[in-house]
Length: 98
Image 1 (tube, rainbow, N blue to C red):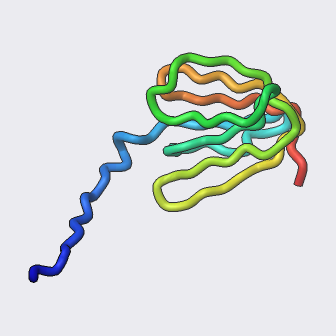
Image 2: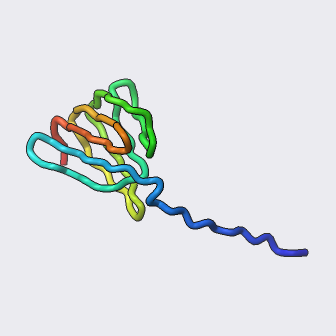
Image 3: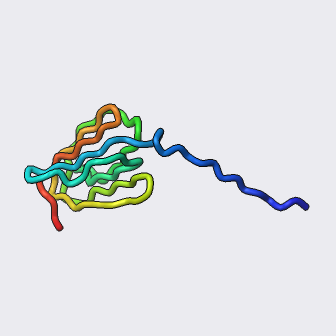
């Protein structure tokens, strides 16, 4: 009996990336390429990935999570708005909680 061999296909993360910016009135919190972002929407949390349809949404107090090629991170915001357009995601946060 032949052993089962599972092959691993390398994923080119470059094709999965979108640009994310998180900005408050005081400073830019984050800018970089991510594969996935999760937001605390006014009607519940939602996720954005590359090639998402254009979107503008209100954000409530909560955690914005984002995952890049090698790591993930999060930031707690006090509210704001997010815009998604052509693989560029801009978060205008009212403020952050540390």
